[in-house]
Each structure stands twice: as structure tokens, then as C-alpha cells.
Length: 128
Image 1 (spheres, rainbow, N blue to C red):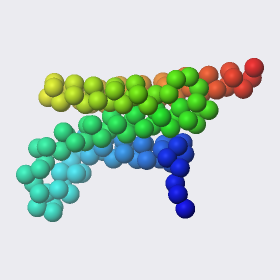
Image 2 (image 1 turned 60 degrees about the vertical axis):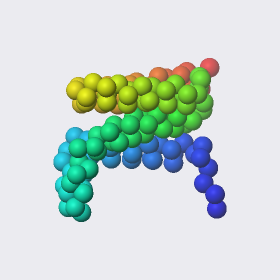
Image 3 (image 1 turned 45 degrees about the vertical axis):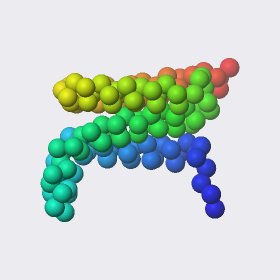
Image 4 (image 1 turned 180 degrees about the horizontal axis):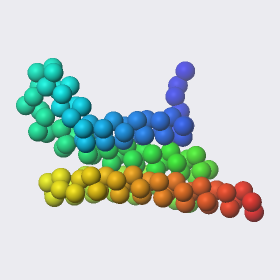
């Protein structure tokens, strides 16, 4: 049995799971406690360098899944969402994680707006 990499529900689950995991680990001491508990305390200073790119790339996967669920309305977000995730990751590291919470909330809101727009386009296409 093979899994379809274009299954929008599966992509949405994995994307949201990755984004929520990264957000939870970025903004709570959960991962710090776990890493310290297994004796890897030296890594805690470097966690954000992996977690923020994970967060932004997970949101790019969510954008792709939403686009697939909407019946492929408009251009594919794969290229622009990946490029945006790369730029946001580099930017947030460059500004040394200042405004990280605001940028993250903005990224989640942007995905929400994208979902809303796709839903509107889909519903307009269904009524015409």
C-alpha cells in the first residue's frame, strides 16, 4: 500500500501537526525540559535555529494542502510558499529572533486568510 503525496487531508494533518509542534516547542519550555531531561542541555541554545524553519515549512505544506483541498484553484503555492518559508526563516534568524511571536502569529494569520480566499473562490466556482 503506497501513500499518495498529493493527498490533501494527509498533507494538512502533517503540516498542521508540524506547525503546532514547532510553535509549542518555540514558545513554551516543553522541548527545553525534554532535551535537558535526556542530558542534551547544550543543544537548548540552538533549538530555535531548527524550530522556526520547521514552523515556516510546515505552514508551506499547509498552504499546499489547502490549495489541493480547494480543487487546485489558482496557481500552485508550492514555489512561492517554499520561497517565503525560506526567506522568513533567514529573516527571523537575521534579526536574532526579535519579534518572533509577532512574525509567527502573522504567518498563521496569513495561512488563515489564504484558506478563506480559497474557500471563497471554491464556493463562487460551485455556484456559477
